[in-house]
Every structure is written in structure tokens, then in C-alpha cells.
Length: 140
Image 1 (cartoon, rainbow, N blue to C red):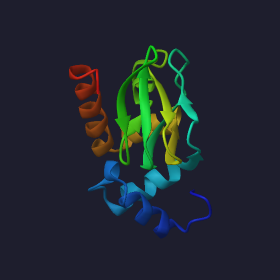
Image 2 (cartoon, helix red, strand yellow):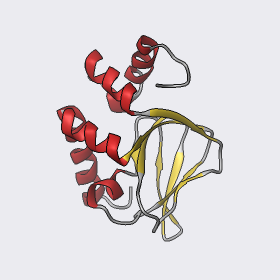
Image 3 (spheres, rainbow, N blue to C red):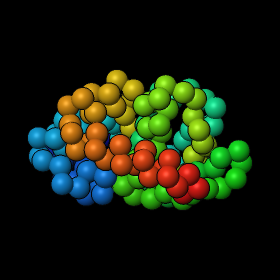
Image 4 (tube, helix red, strand yellow):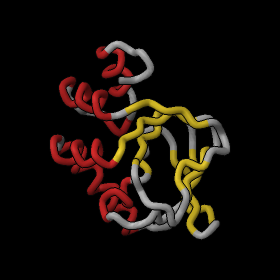
């Protein structure tokens, strides 16, 4: 659960994140059960290129920059998922992601992410679309 929020507050909070737009109350409740809320101050490296992937995140608030081999390739904001590629293909991180501003994130470990994909077609569809877009437009 998220930082002491009541279940309904958690699902209302999740419903405000663009990634989860259109999810049913039951789906949002399941997301709340599987995810955890984390904060990262500006400057924090969320993931480092080359490291193994053990978790992914959805940005609630703030912005983060994506770097490939030290070159800035994209800026991400609320509703963006990061880190999913390493969980899908079981390869090292393809990019470094660093917080530009203070971030609030929903964190999913690899088991929770797999459960989301297995149980929720809406998550699977969003992740597949995201991966497709990243492959077609790798520079952001």
C-alpha cells in the first residue's frame, strides 16, 4: 500500500496518473496492492545503463531525463513508465534515467510487473505500445 493512504485514496490517486487512465476501480485496487510509492529527490539516478533490471516505475509527478551512453535522448514526465524494457527482455538497462526534479513514482518489482502483465490486458497493451514506440523512435 502507499504511505498509509486508505485503499480508496490509493485508487483515486492512481486514477489521476495518465498511465492508469481508463482503468477500472478493481484494476486500480490491484495496482495499489502490487505497487509501492517512492520518492526520489532531484539528481537521483533512478536506473543506470548496463545494470540488471529488477524494477520499473511509473512517474506520478516530476520530470526525469533519459541518457544513452551519456547523451540526453528524452525527458519524461507524469504518466511515463521507465525500466520496463529490462524486465521484458531480461537484458541490462539500455539507458540511464535521472530525476530532473523531485519525483514521486509508483514502483513495481519484477514479480509485480509480471503479475500486472498477466492479469491486466490494459497494462499489457500500454506496455506493448510503449515498447513499439521506443523501438520505432529510439531517440525519444
